[in-house]
Length: 177
Length: 190
Image 1 (cartoon, rainbow over the protein chains, first blue to last red):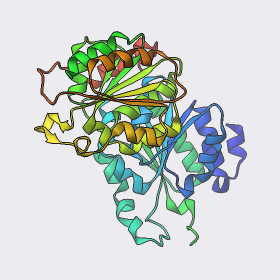
Image 2 (cartoon, rainbow over the protein chains, first blue to last red; image 1 turned 60 degrees about the vertical axis):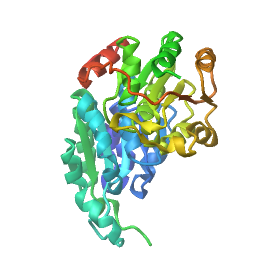
Image 3 (cartoon, one colour; image 1 turned 30 degrees about the horizontal axis):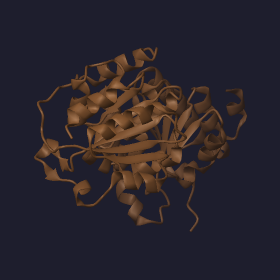
């Protein structure tokens, strides 16, 4: 991970995140787009070794990831915090089958948020995940995020964990309106 | 048509396909044909069957994946038809056992009895092959059709009688079902 260490993680964390997922042998990804995930989505979509799926709603990604694991692939699901609420019942699937799940969630509604409609689900994101038994980790800086995702990948794919990493809106920066 | 007979006829041509079943009667119908390591039964996560099948098909491109689910379960994942059409797996077929009712909960009417055609929606989304089948002769034809290679996903609606047959219960221990399914593919537990 030398290349990761040399990056300015305050700025280049999305590229480092891509390298971290590749190093963890993640070969499958599903997403509902979010501005904060743009670079990572583009990098994974452009990677011929990675199968990607654009979703109509976030819970689809939870079931797809479970299916990918059934067939031997490590999958990651990308979404923003508003999508976590859509996932609740589908999280029964990885919980009950004890199937690895890694969710990377960009936060809205918590820092310089212009749109008040983002606030209720942003406030409930962590509680909703924890209510379904998903372990929640959270990062506010690029360096911490990379370290967090490295270890979350171990706990998900090597220890059958269901893990969400919340990427703080403070790291993502203010949305331009 | 009789759902158990239809599923049994279809699975006679299984030929190594991996099978994912939607919660409720479709899981019972597949289990009634014999419990197998390469069956993955859902007992919940309604709306997850076809999508679990998509992930599996993408992870196992050399194997055929057959999802067998109900109309209510598929209706809950309406958007999944768009996602699967865009993903365009060549090795995924979805069979919807359509009794036009929610059989597990008291036979309330579902949308498919009120003009919604799941095969029509799948075709509009861009599924490679679709169909609505009314009798067992058509199911025999589908069994042959599923053996042929396809350039994209398929969705077939089997119009079945609305009745609750004696339950044939698959294991409810989901980690057991998952682990033996993966072992069938040569994959180890953690």
